[in-house]
Amino acid sequence: MSTTLLYHGFGIRGRYEYVRTEYVPGGIILSLRQRREHLRCAHCGSAEVHVKTHQHRIYRSVPIGSRAVTIHFPVPRVECQRCGLSRQVRVNFARERVTYTKSFERYVLELSAFMTIQDVAHHLQVSWDLVKGIQKRYLKKKFSRPRLRHVRQIAIDEIHIGRSGFATVVLDLERGAVVFVGPGRGVEAVRPFWRRLRSSRAQIRAVATDMAPGYIAAVREFLPDAVHVFDRFHVVKLFNEKLSEFRREMYRTLPDELQKKVLKGVRWLLLKNPENLDDDKNERRRLEMALQLNQPLATVYYMKERLRYLWEQPTKKAAQKWLDDWLRTADNSGIRMLKQFARTLAAHRQGLLAWYDFPISTGPLEATNNKIQLLKRQAFGYRDTEFFHLKIYALHLAKYALAG
Image (cartoon, rainbow, N blue to C red; front, side):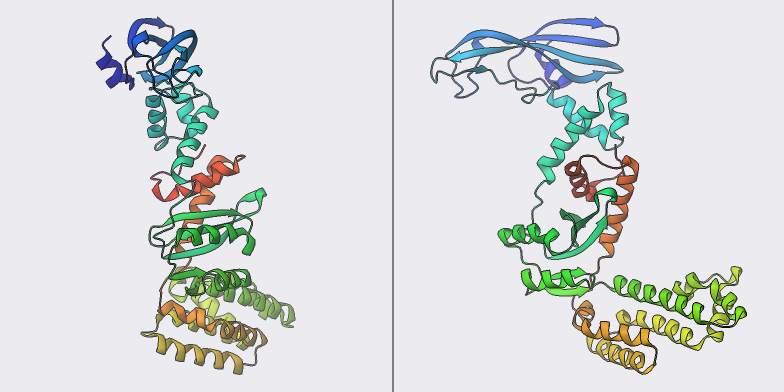
């Protein structure tokens, strides 16, 4: 076998000589050797070395069809006459302390783009841990410390990751890439990210979060010059939660059983946008009947619909005027729930109106969260938290939602 075939077929470059080929059931063994004049000290590169012994090593290489290919190579241990050190020579076609060649490693990573860890391991007839180790090493090298220098707009939110609790995720909104994953939630969870951001000298122009006090305090402390935008979807979600609580409270206080019956099945109809109501299922008529029977509930519902238009005004000045009108109407409604929610929005008006300076939200981060949850479900959870975080960092490049 020529050295050209060794290079092009199995990625073995360097001055290695082919010795023989053995055919065994289900596999092929290629034996190689290295001549004395080609040996170099692994420390200083000197050719003035003396061979002391050989360590027989077996490396897994790319298969030929369904047959596994292994490389048998006696690795020389030499004593250098120049630096005086005694150590094994460097093997060019494999990394240190592994049992596979570099070409095999590349092949595993190529298959991993289309197959799960378990499928790759079964196809190549290797252990699950070996494939996972190759993936982890690659992800760690490429994604362990994402570059932050050119990040300008970010979104911050927390995600639930099962028994491990919560994790805080930071997303680069311009690239759609996760740039930080920290265990826990709140200010302390994201503190390491602020330190990395400061050392990178990134100029963050805008941040999108929900209205959690912890995030507000953190952004004010670490990014005082950035525009803080409160996520519109979290605002609507919070109002919907208050609306559901208000409906339950109204249901408990209604004396008429007929009114209770009408009100009982309209929770999801209240939360739906009007354009999404299904006339074939009589949803619009059922909602109208419930609102006619209860004037306070109707007021809260129509205020919910009006709130959506806060983010559809032509200018920031028009939005400010619209918000003032909504807050005044809510405060004059006499409904405690609306008055409380109006005070909440009034306290956060600057972040709400900041959307007109930077129309960003945590919506892309919610989409990333869905991918994370799918990743977790397909793997039935991750015992290795570091590997899980690395997979999250690489999600924006994944073409297939695969897990082990």
